[in-house]
Length: 211
Image (cartoon, rainbow, N blue to C red; front, side):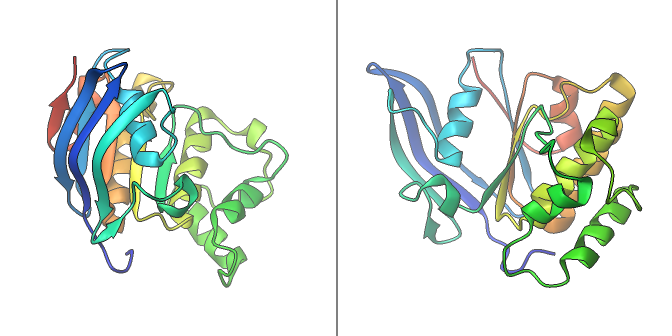
């Protein structure tokens, strides 16, 4: 479990482009809760993620505040927000082994890195995969490694950017169960953006529709 579990607070957020309001949100996400934001392409899902993660384009204007517990995040650069991201693409480093990818997620001062990597792989059914080249893994195996790399980085909140959209139907359901289960167990406030109603239903939390 993650120590000092805290809620993510999106306070009176408004994002505008050329004076036109694209998004407005005021919402709290509790530890272990998954809030789903649904909408078609162009509805503002990616803009919302960019704002929360800390890389919103200067072309947009944002108002409001973002807090994790009582710590304000919107004034901090992306690398200091403690927010983890999981994308459609696993984005594993091709020049590193599976273990190397997982070690990359660990904090620099982490102890027993080899043991933590082995335990993480066991947890997702990939025991003994430490020396494997990511290119030799199936899509589902790559997705599992990406998830555990995220969790090993000890994020305080998580953003999911349509992480199941490139998986086939059977694997998609399996990964939904795994991802949402791991995030709930870790007690992490999570925001999922998707256009897939099945993703939203599997998340089991509140749903906000855009567009």
